[in-house]
Image 1 (cartoon, one colour):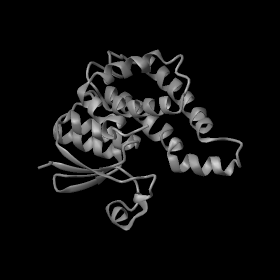
Image 2 (image 1 turned 180 degrees about the vertical axis):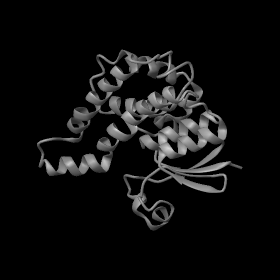
Image 3 (image 1 turned 90 degrees about the horizontal axis):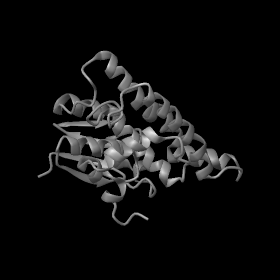
Length: 213
């Protein structure tokens, strides 16, 4: 029997982050798909779980949690994942890296935001153009932030941390939208380290949706 239920969508960056954390914690979980393309997130059942109509939603320990960063912090606190360093200063730096992706870059690349905005452009800008416009500068800034720290081989140390769980989904999106990856050597090095880690492999979008094209 599964220890948790995760309501997610395979391409959701926020869901991807939580799948990685659940795998790192070795928590068995049941995936219940909320098809964002089909509009499942707007259905009454899901709105009862999360009035925001977003994924992921995690049911664990008799609780129901929303918002991926809050879920990651809960799993870190209750399962000892070490996603943030003990040092308050080091923890703040790692959380800043995570928020650079999850708070600043990810929201403008949300599918609903991108569709609405490109629709307003009346054909002047397509989805790929929108994504490329925001993702590359965001990743270049992240690259510069990595250069200020101690990447070895993950974003901020020898083990996966909060920033890695946020970066990997964004790199997946960057490749999906054919973003220019030149000048991102540190990001690509982190990606290489994460790609061979079993917890990241099992959470990879195409791994949880084998029919992905």
